[in-house]
Length: 162
Image (cartoon, rainbow, N blue to C red; front, side, top):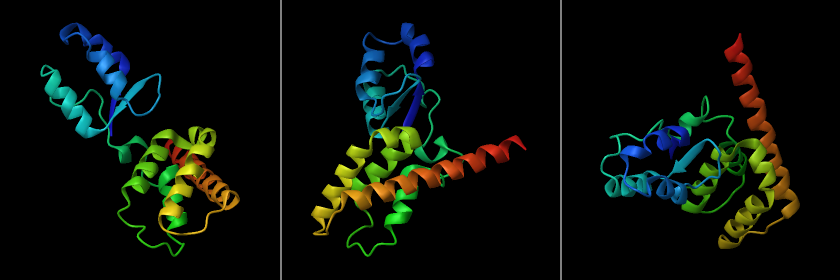
């Protein structure tokens, strides 16, 4: 995931062709006031449309570098919890990987707000595998993942201040 600071993109707009900021906005996958979040393939498409872009995106970050480490991110924590269940075909599931990345970008607060969406996606995945689904259990494991992420993020933040 490419993370592009909106203020830097806007300051470069005078050098860009008309529509550059609008193109970034329409390609951004996460609503955010400070950054555009754009998939790498989409960034390459934009780069082809606007060849005067820098060779690397402005303030780009991989999804894993958006936090201190992969641990403490809600999607990653949910994946760890779910890995304990005997689920067929759980490795390499593109929709599951997309949900994990999205939850990692959202963080704990947004995941709480998006509980219905997350549970709906978990329901779809369970039905695709012919597994039973419980909204109650899904909410419990998502809340557990959120709490684990908050705990780990808090320990990373408190460790940095020592």
